[in-house]
Length: 380
Ligand SMILES: Nc1ncnc2c1ncn2[C@@H]1O[C@H](COP(=O)(O)OP(=O)(O)O)[C@@H](O)[C@H]1O
Ligand SMILES: [Mg+2]
Image (cartoon, rainbow, N blue to C red; front, side, top):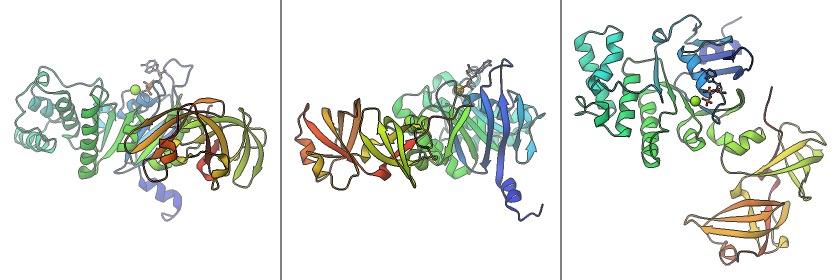
């Protein structure tokens, strides 16, 4: 094959490659099913999914602590099969891979270098530089229990990076921290990734954390990849019902395709209304679909006839509205659904919503391009 062919190019660009990887712990159930993914050098890639979906298992296989039941993993064009964890040049920050409690910060940082037989002066220099990188100068003689949660996590990150690994793996590193600290650490991790340019594979079940950090997100459910996309595409263009429900807030309306028409389709909702939606993945007439509609895409009016720009119009009863400063959040009973949510930016033109009373009927409208008819999640 010539080196200019697309296949050769993609091989060259991929830094990590999972190829038809499967994993079963008991020899019967697959907890990871035919996982295929290439990761580019310098990417911040996140595995996102509910608890038990197989994220940690994938990371452990890359790190070398678990062996795939089938398929193979490459790192920098080397097949990892028989390479033990400590020779993979991978930095790890795992939830249950805590700091050594009896060692000082400096000793914790020196540990990976001692294992790799660095000499004393190189260790001292590296420990110093790395402490500066995570802004912990002056803390070198403290023990982990003399540090805050955020500081401990920074030491853990520093320890994972100190030997210049090829790649950094992080498994829910922030989940033990409180919300404010988590937000701050997310910013620090982003900065670190930006300045070092290192490839990061990150695991979380928290979709907003995944959106904040990642260049690409892999959505997992039950060991199967549901979608791989940049954060904005995942939100704007979910490919199936699972992704639409898992990433971001969503009004999910169940129905049946009545007629397809180019890129859109007519759906009869279970609640009886007929609407038109983008047809994602070519759902055929008769297919059961979930119509996904983001709360900020819905327009409100006093009467159906006022919604001139919307192809889709339904009536709803206002249950509750909450003023949140930058936006107004209204909850309706609509399409036979309690909790039909509408978010409106606080700007001119929403006066009629501000004065609307709870219990009042209102008109809800949205355009065809604002809702997506989606098939169910991928299952094997
Ligand atoms: N060491 C193990 N032995 C047996 N089953 C395991 C083991 N580790 C994980 N599992 C099972 O594999 C599935 C995926 O787990 P895991 O990869 O930890 O998911 P996640 O990280 O997405 O929460 C779960 O059903 C879990 O119970
Ligand atoms: Mg896990």
